Amino acid sequence: MMVLSLLKKDFLIVKKYVLIMFFFIILIPPVMRWRTPEFTGILGFILSVIFSVFMLLQYVSLKEYQFPKAATLLCATPFSRKAMVLSKYIFCMAIYVICCIVYEVETLLIPQLGTADIKPFALMFLVTSIFISLYLPVQYKLGYEKAKFAFLVIIMTSPIIVPLLLRMENLKLDFLSTTSPYLISGSTVLLGSVLLAVSAFLSMKIYDKADLA
Amino acid sequence: MNDILTVNGLNKLYGDFSLRDVTFSLPEGCITGFIGVNGAGKTTTLRTILGLTTKLSGNIQFFGLDFNKNEKQIKDRIGIVLDDGCFYEELSLSEMKSIISSAYTSWSEQDFKRYMDMFSLDPKQKINTLSKGMRMKYALALALSHNAELLIMDEPTSGLDPLIRSQLLKTLIEYMKNGGKGVFFSTHITSDLDKIADTLIMIDKGRIIFQEEKDTLLDTYRIVKGDSQSLTADVRKLFLDISETGFGFTGITKRISEVRSYIPDVVTERPTIEDIMLGNIGGAK
Image 1 (cartoon, each protein chain N blue to C red):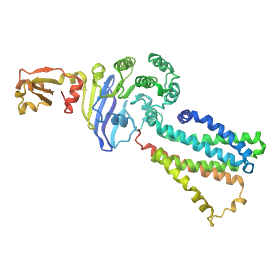
Image 2: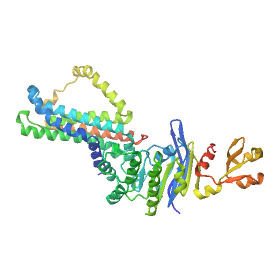
Image 3: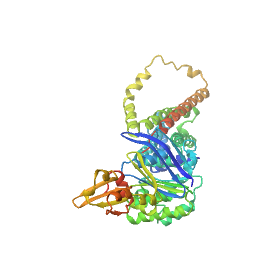
Image 4: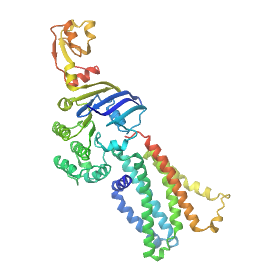
């Protein structure tokens, strides 16, 4: 219950941007279908998830950074620090779920967008999990400004690193084509969940020892 | 009388500053003032006993319960007013209230509305449009609307005009009359404590200097004025602090009968809390 109240708080402090983001989530897949039909379907969904989760999390972090004493007041009430941390993870995953629902509805209304099967949802769950599993503990440890800088460096260097990773010849993924898609999706979701659980545990440990402003 | 808060051997390192063996207790039914100059350790002590900053060592008990083991239950019974409000400034008063109220098991919407009306606060107003005084009143309305047994406030009267300070002090007295078990507030404006405090705790450089009932404290100390020539080395030792001018000396002591035995014709005055505070840190008038 406490976590839900804190989740409501996160949406409240960025309420100005929530509506705008919601429109983006709705618009990205059909606009991509219209402007770049060769990338119809799943790429629009992927972009809407990355865009909305990253932007809204950034806005929440910015507001917490602007008003650091507000979190101090909340920690002086019966809200636990664990619940404060957990609400951030749930906030990100709630946005992911909203993106999934919106995309599912859109594929029903606009058949040209393709079909929404479980694989892209599972893949994006893993991608979102990896992102917030790395970002949130770093932010709790280093603070908003330094975490933003660190991830900016990663984003700037990604055009160099990603092609290098793709050229790795030892990486043999042929077995995936013979494996059941449900098994792959299940494993992907499981891996994402484990990452989230480990990351949330780390963030709680870090925030538990933090001296609040 | 039971103690509603007991702090024992609290130690904390905070950069160059440290709290050293901070020990005190709050008796039930009292308004306790926590005094000290800026940087003495008042805010650090309050934040540490509320678990907002980590401690090196020490034991903290509220209502006879260990804080570490019963944190949530204890915080449910305490009202908190932090320095400068500590709100998400872009929210409206009712939005911020909806967040805070969900933390407490016995939140009273009726009490909150009563305080909002009493302080003439509009729930639709944005927090960043409130004046410092209105912000403090709002913080007090939030802190008093969940049947808190103990109210802890960090510098609540700092920067407020005399009218708002007076309203705030009246609200505290009313809170105690309506069943509050205690108020603990830090301040460096000691004139507020002259009016309402029952007990005083003084901190300086991270150490507790004294804990005493206000009336006992005011009876114990005396401001002494006299001729500088009568200040022998033995007499000087009886004073906490002495200032001298061409016309004579003014000092503060808690050993007035001994001073009188050396200088029978000295003029004495009852000190204010500020005199006692400054005397104890070596800056009396």
